[in-house]
Structures are given as C-alpha cells and as structure tokens.
Length: 170
Image (cartoon, rainbow, N blue to C red; front, side):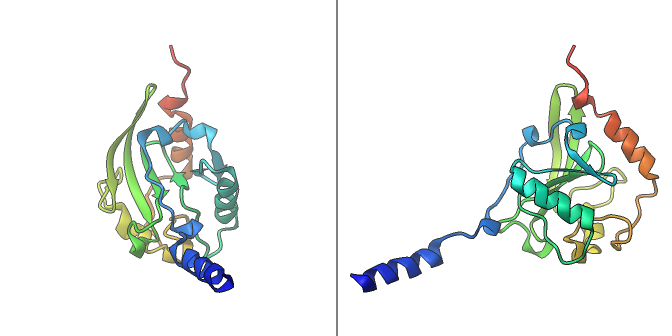
C-alpha cells in the first residue's frame, strides 16, 4: 500500500501543472480605465490576482534584469496599446508576452489586433523592439535597449488622463 501511495504522489508530480505554466487569455473586458491601475513611472500595471499584482509592481519598481512578470500581468503606456503576460505555451521565445492594439471609448474596449505581429501607433511591429529588452522580461523602458518612441513621457501621461473609459457615463 505504501508503494502505491508513493507511486500516486510521483505520478501526480508529473501531471500537476506548475502555477507559472498557466495561461491568461485577455479579453476586451480586461482592459478597463487605465487610471484605476497602479502606476510605476509612466507605465500602468494590472493583474486580477492581487498577490500577483503586487509582484508585478515590485518588479517594475525595482527595474532589475532577469526578473519575470507573473502570468496575467497587463502593462499599458497609453490606452491604445498593451502588453499582456499570457504565459502557458504562448510564444515561449518572448516569455509568453502578447501585444495588443486597442480601440477605446466611454462604452469600453475593443481589441483591434493581438499577437506577435501586432503594430504600434507608429505602424511598427511591437515584438522586434521588445526583444531588445529580453533581460527585462521584454518590457521596454528607458535603458532597456528598446528603440525610443520619440515622445516625451508627458504625452503618455496626458493620453492616460484622457482615457475615455474613465469618463463618467452620461
């Protein structure tokens, strides 16, 4: 009987899925008023799981290489684009990040495009720039090796403040 119990435990270890292997598939409803999200420097960060949100904030605040954001983390510099840590088997070469082009209005968010080949507001693919920040879990910030967007941070702050999803419904 003891041998059977050991075999069951060993088998369970092979079948169990580690927490980091889970996958988060973002829906339009996951992209809400950007001003309600935590802000670190000029980046907004969200995760539905409060414990994982705290971890994501800590990683962003400390800005140290070789740290990995938890699955389910959403990062936005402005309301029209997002990076989502999807995890699971999604694009392991880019540590599970998925890029989004979003359309926002007072009634909510629509996903215009998503994936590895999604293009930013400058019509450039997101992924090739983010690869330069591989040591920072593919998150672009000043000094991470990514190409600069050519806009001052104050522009992104203004875009965040003008997020139409944050306006009271009329």
